[in-house]
Length: 179
Ligand SMILES: [Zn+2]
Image 1 (cartoon, rainbow, N blue to C red):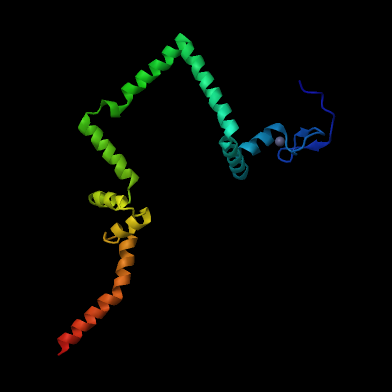
Image 2 (cartoon, rainbow, N blue to C red):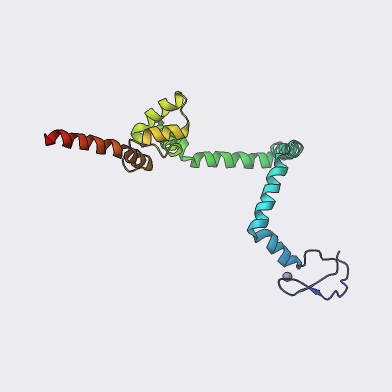
């Protein structure tokens, strides 16, 4: 497969292994592979390229066709089909959600909902939902709810804004008491 290599006098930038005349990277095969699979900048660039490629309609269509064909091959083969079906049944049995009673499932759904709005105190979830239905954006709802919850940044900020008011009220009261 590989042609006999002419002595090139060139060596790998990383490990000093001999590399051939035609080498364009300056790295031997193992070093080049290691570089391409571990350097953060290179990985990010490649991921971005892959995402862009997969987003192209014609590529999407081709991948979808490949997936459909492979799925069809599995389903047309009785042995494979049974194997996949068994996986599904076994997984279903292990799926704890399916084995819960109605109350248990409701609890899980509530926990998931709480996770999605983890910033919101549990006893204010209904209020958050009502505000959302009235069309308030997330940032607005957060502000409106959390500025009444001691210990949050929003609460602290609101208290700061109130200080001048509080000071004025206190001064007025002291003035009134002075007479
Ligand atoms: Zn090398």
